[in-house]
Each structure stands twice: as C-alpha cells, then as structure tokens.
Length: 129
Image 1 (cartoon, rainbow, N blue to C red):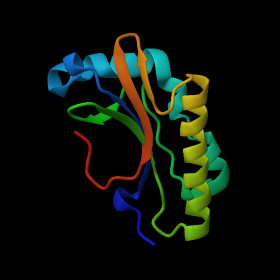
Image 2 (image 1 turned 120 degrees about the vertical axis):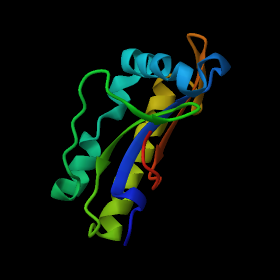
Image 3 (image 1 turned 30 degrees about the vertical axis):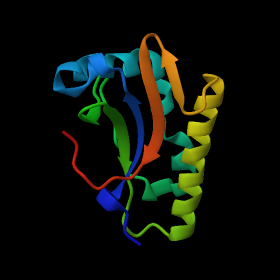
Image 4 (image 1 turned 135 degrees about the vertical axis):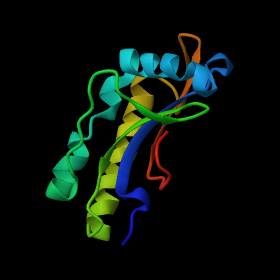
C-alpha cells in the first residue's frame, strides 16, 4: 500500500479573502497557532500506528502550508504500514475533525474572529511550500 507523500496531515484552511495567498500566510499561521494548535496533536494516531508513525516535531510558530489558504502539520508514515492499521488511523483522524467541529459548534465550517475556517485531514502527495 502506498500513501501519497507518506504523510498523515491535519490541516485548517483560513478562507478569509483578506488572508489569501503569500501575503496572508503569516496571519493565517498566527491564527492557527493562537486558536487551534491543539487540533494538530497526532497522539491518537500514534497510539494506533506505533513505530509506523515517524516522529516529527515543530518549533512553536512553525507551520507548513499551501497558498491560498491551507495551513498544516504532518507526521510521516512508514510506507509498509498495513491497510487495516492505516484505516484505523484515518478513522481516528476523522473523529478528531468531527470532535473539533462539535466543540466549536460548527459543521466543519465556522466564522470565527472574522476568519472562515475549514478543518480536514488529508494525505496529499505534493510537497509543502
């Protein structure tokens, strides 16, 4: 089984038109750091995948992303992880997104502090910018 990019990613998109593109990237990252950093915890996935989920640490304020609005953090996954364990990990990630949405009282979209947020889990294969 192959995972594109061998990464499990948690992401949030900040869809405020004023914060789109490279010019708004630092502001998007600051919003996510200040208000949603806990969303990016991979401990529940680590409990399922164990050593198949590789370590990855981020300094405070360090984020990956794609323009115009995508902010994420990832953990690398060993390519040989079984399909069954990967499915369990993805289910746990999906529960995290659902719980995050429930806590914030929105259905994966929210208008908060003037920024429209969208949460997701993803495994895209493209490199970060």
